[in-house]
View 1 (cartoon, rainbow, N blue to C red):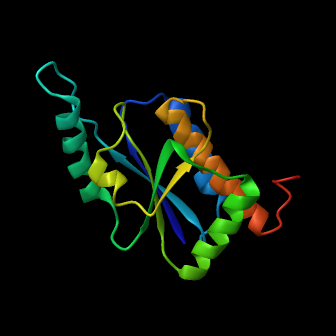
View 2: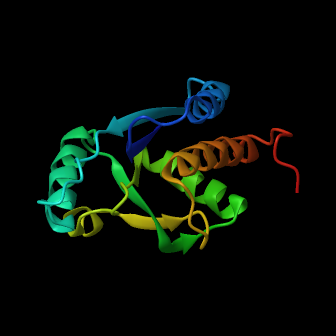
Length: 156
């Protein structure tokens, strides 16, 4: 199974890439995490938020691997415990589809993306920098997979 983290972002601090890479390499070949970065639209005074989101929507749509389950990250989404995430991933593994987690840009995601996803997931009701969301999500995916495999990384 493949997880994709599709993030609208660029020019992030090195520690974000280092942390993401650390969790991605800890997973086996059976379950992998891949990062897809989508360039954000330039914010200028002559572009509305709707125009910016629409331009990013087209970039996101073009970057999504075909046949994947789409999960949007949003503070209003469903919050899972790590055990619930592990249970959900177990079900996803049995279905045999890869999953794309979509992290929007500074202005969020266009309604076309929001209406096309299969679910909405929230890491917290707190607001995090988008780069940190990438790190937290990759760690939680790693943690959930280790829980599924009864690895001692996750201790309850």
